[in-house]
Length: 355
Image (tube, rainbow, N blue to C red; front, side, top):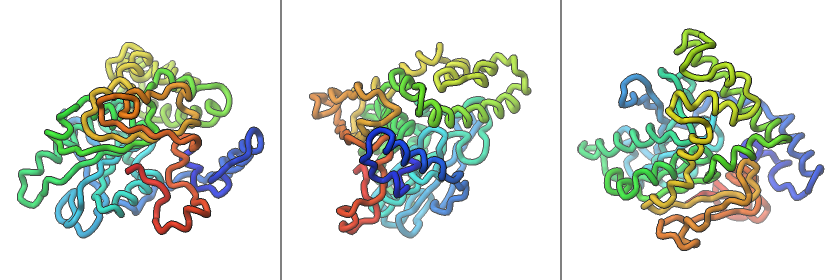
C-alpha cells in the first residue's frame, strides 16, 4: 500500500504467501501515526463555495519566485492535484507528487476536499468519490483570473490518486471539450483509478486482511466525521432524518456506511445508485483531453478482472486516453517507492512520475 512504500522491508517483496505477508505485518506494527504538520506548501487559500455556505482550501507550491497568487514568474503552467479518501495535502504522496511537478517547472495547487484541511466544513456532508463541484469551481476561478493584467493564461493539468483519480476522470468526462475551451486544461495524469466502484467495494470489504486493516481504518475516520456532523448539524439527534445515523455508526463495512450516510445527503437512492452514478468508468467516453491512467494489476482494492482497456487508444477508443498497468505495486505502492540498485544510478530526485 501507499503508506508502506518507503519502508525498506516493503520496497520489493518477492516472497509469496506467509513470507511476504510477514514483512507487511511487521511494517504495519511499526507504523507511526501521521504527523499533521507540513512545511512543504508555500501558501494556503480558503475559497468560499458558490452557495456561500461552505468552503474548501487549496495549498500552493510555487516552482520559482512568486509572481502573483497561484503563479510563479517562470512557471510552465499549473498542476491541480486531487488527494484520496480521508487524505489531504499533507499526505506524503501529495507532497511527493507536488515536489516532482514543481521540479518539472510547474506551479502546483492541491485542493483539500471540504473537511479535509484540518478544519471542519460548514455544511452537512463534505465530499465523495464523484464530488467534482470544488474542482470545477476552482477551474472556473482560474479562468476568471485571465482578465487580470498580472495573471498569464498558462496550461492547466489535472492529477490525482485513488478517489482523486476518480474525481479527475469524472470531471473531464463531464466537461468534454469545455475542459480545454473554457478552462485551458491541456491534459491529466492519474494513478489508482477505481473505474467501477460497484465492483471494487466487494474487494475493499472482502473478509480477511482488507476488511481487518484497510476497511476498518477507513470506517474509523468516517464514523468520527459522521458523529461530528450529527452533533453540529443535527442537534446531536440520533433519530435525525438527514442521514441514517444508527446504521452508519453500526456499519461493519464501508458499503454499509456509505449506504447509511451518503444517499439522503447527496440525493442517491442507495449506495449502489451512488456507485453507478459516480464511477469514472462511465465518464471515460466523454474525456476530450490527453489522459494517462496508471494502475497496478495486484491492487487489493480493485477487481483484478475488470480493466477497461477498450476505452483507451490502445483498445480502439477515439478518446485520447492512455492506460498503463503494472504487474505489481498494490494500491499506489509503486509511487515514489524505494529505489532499486539500477534506479539509484539514474540522476533524478523521484523514481517515477505519471507524465
